[in-house]
Length: 94
Image (cartoon, rainbow, N blue to C red; front, side):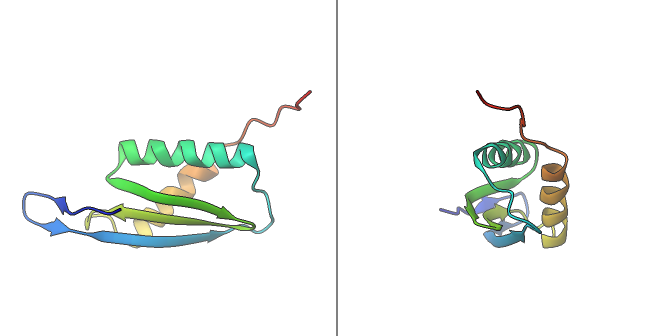
């Protein structure tokens, strides 16, 4: 669950529930693994903690916590742009 984030001049608990809808249903195991890997990379590089990632048919739910220096718009832009740059491995399976 979320925790207080202590900085030098503030203490915060900002939790966001973001829902990203796909134009067409493209979620499979390969996409899910890439999505989770990118989110893990985002969590390591930025002050964003993914509390939950859930794929539901044609949309993805992100429950995340961040610091006040990141606006909700910046968080969404960051997540969507970094995920869009990745492609799952589309090699045929035997």
